[in-house]
Length: 224
Image 1 (cartoon, rainbow, N blue to C red):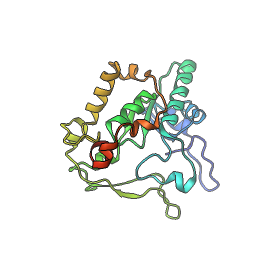
Image 2: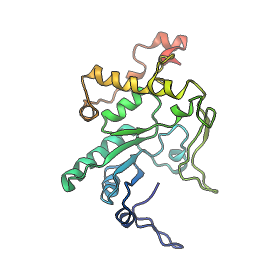
Image 3: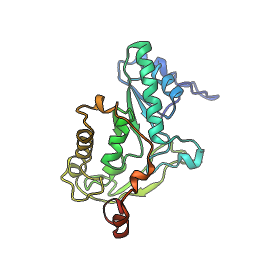
Image 4: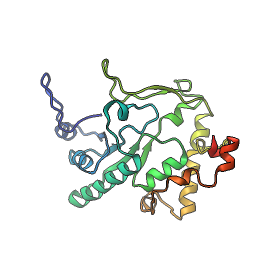
């Protein structure tokens, strides 16, 4: 994670724009959660922007720093900045939703809000092959006197292949993530990710609980 204009009194700070232009490498920068910051980072020449401050399952930035934006709003604002940058320069910058992706439905909603891709952490930490053996910890700016990021137990649910591509043996959306995304796109009538980014989106918190009384009472499916 970087700052486009970091200020230091002890060392020569990194000039991100010069760094990106000096090396013939694709550079992804982040994280950010606002229109203005995203546009500023895009103008440095980065090919991708990581979006999300604090939504991760192991991140404590919102509590420690008091900084954060709900992920759907952050993605939509950064996607708006991408459109302006595209109009100004003709360069398309990839928007990557980073944090809070737990289910296939979360990934689908991130793309519908404007993301080109998502960073997935805790679901992959649940894989039997994961080196953390079910544990996941956030690496957001570790500092010896002000750490941000907790070590959480995500559990071991399935193989990496089952988590990504199925088959799913649970109905809570945490397995077969790509199957969930594909079915979400098909159900809403979109064939490609680019088309899905134009889906109509609404704020409806009750979607998570609507009509799920029996599931919650029995602790199954979305009631777990």
